[in-house]
Image 1: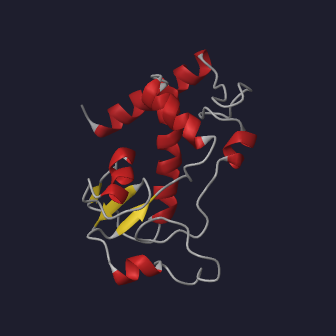
Image 2 (image 1 turned 90 degrees about the vertical axis):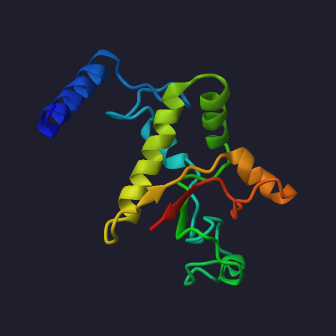
Length: 162
């Protein structure tokens, strides 16, 4: 099947889906925005990481925003090129992740994935897209503190390999 035909089918199915089942915000149950499962207020209230380190995605300390890497990543550089985390792991993001992971709320996964997709689009406007995106399981990130995992990261996110 050609790419143009598959794109047309995808667009048509999305159009039908959102006409038959209008979006409802997964957080407050108000009407959602067009083609999203969040209302405008909830979408703006999602906690985003302000001034993240480009290596570990942890927030940079105040006063060091001109830097792109935190001190830990400068001293011990990770083996990947960049870490991208779309949202800060705080409520209501924790509820979205738990609902997706433990309660089969697939719509929560769509909300989280679209947040990551938007961030990736904005992060790579001037740069070439990465060769590999690798999701880091949160359990693996948690195990870093107990030395049960060999990931060099302190935050759940997507390491990027050039």
